[in-house]
Image 1 (cartoon, rainbow, N blue to C red):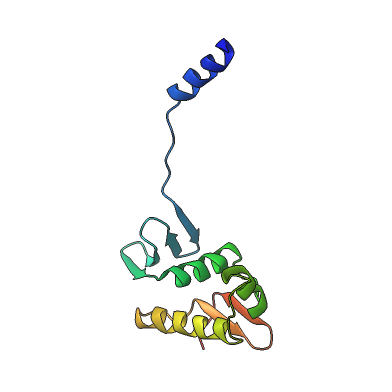
Image 2 (cartoon, rainbow, N blue to C red):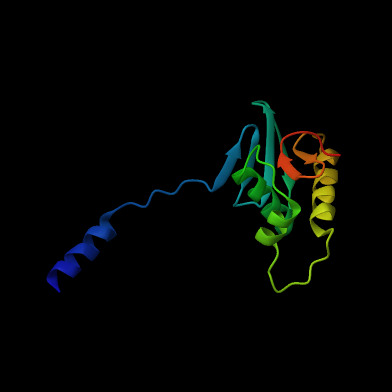
Length: 126
């Protein structure tokens, strides 16, 4: 018991190291604290794009797999619950909305459609 208490006291003395929760790929930063995408084409200008929960999940998935082609089925399995009856074009619709939103903020080169295969981060939104 005394060893257990000594270990607890040692843990209490440690200073937790908090690091900002963010995922960065190239010029993109996905900020977990604000649920937004920060695009910094240069160090002077940052575009902050607010995201819905599903948009955030979609970009997080793409950013964890940069430059990798992800099929609609892979994306659907990752982001939508198995019990939900999602329609066949839910992924295409979500990606299209994401591209439209990002394009409205002035950047149309984030998600690329690879026809017949799926989608990947970086390229043109079409």
